Image (cartoon, rainbow, N blue to C red; front, side):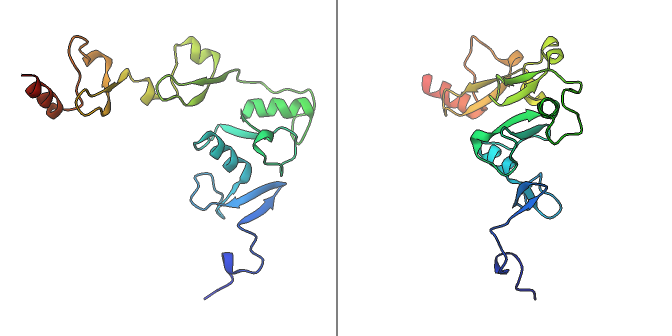
Length: 181
């Protein structure tokens, strides 16, 4: 049995290492971990800051260009196309020469009216009426509160009867009308 693995190894440094100038942290269960179980530290810091996992389309840019400076004030979430533009403008560590700006998907971040998550939306998406971050949020559903148990639930807009109370279950409906009569 090898007792020199992980924390038992005298060279253990808390699960951190460096690769191509980036600080990596051991997070074996993370969806974006590499085959050794490491994730770039700046992604983990940004995920903690925004309170969710970053998508595969979101990159974390180091504002001052120092890949080891992972302070939150030095990090910003950008798309791949925006990241290419930033590096093309500065000519820093990119295959694009300074001033040679690649074609871009224009867009901006918007808040989903249903789940309140930030998502990237392009002008063509807005033109076609897309206001939501996903198909689940786009379904024509309304969030309601049960008048009996105060549990929140969703219903399709088409089945909500505005003149009647809406309940989360048949039991709550029966309970409500049994008390009323």
